[in-house]
Image (cartoon, rainbow, N blue to C red; front, side, top):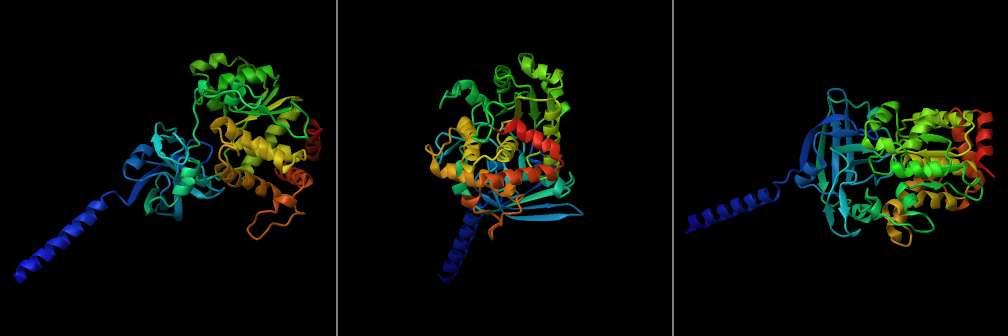
Length: 414
């Protein structure tokens, strides 16, 4: 009998162990090859697995990971890294990104996985050039280790539904803005300090990946745009767009290119970087040299790179915080229907995550202001004059001459 109980106890332990093993058959860690510098504005690295296959391993948006990048020369360790379907971290913070992959029927509820914009899982810094800063190479391995299931689930569910349709019919006119303008994310930049209908922003005038280029083309033509700051593209990208069937529809886009009225700036999203700022000054100088009277600036969506340029130029003219915030968040209304009224919690999260990050960085260029202990500023006490001084100092440091600073201000400011 005693032997029977010993056998039974051993059998129970084996079953418990087997059960524990069965529950952990999903991998807690995966090591992947670094493929290349991600082919987008964020200069992260693509790793050798699709987003779909990564999720099929048992990982989910909102999970928390540790990530190691290494080769024979370098080893970089990153703790508490979120996996998001968008760039929902502060500037400079690392994330695993499957941009645009998850579409939710209702924000905060279950996901419906319907499409992906990225062919591979991407590891990156938000708005900083990880590939260049860390001297990454394609001989590196990327080890991704699960720390906590759903460790960032709150943030992912809060804003993970911020994906958008590429179909014109899914949009409608609102707030006095036409359906075409909403879809194209096209508008004149406005503040009480700025001249009307001089500065415009939009989605891409040339890249039709999101089906918006023909609408931007028509709106640019209707508004008499005479110079374009193309923040996203190089000549090689333009040459690629020319092979698309839709290129024949972009008559005004072609006209502007043919007449040397487009500056191709090929900027990353790293607005704190010297390369971004030098390219911006080059583009603005070019617009002034062409005696531009109606300037359109855009990246691909008209959201990130365009967003900071908007803040900078509005600030240069002495716009208020509320005016700059309104212009910035129109993009989130246009693409996602996100407003303060529709979802205040998500709206406030984006304002703090994206817009205030830009504002606080801009204000570092006004030496008269003193940052608080966390490096941010008391925005309630910042004046339009502070924004103007900060913008002038940033542009001057990036190489804009005093004459061109005065000419740019005269062109844009009332």
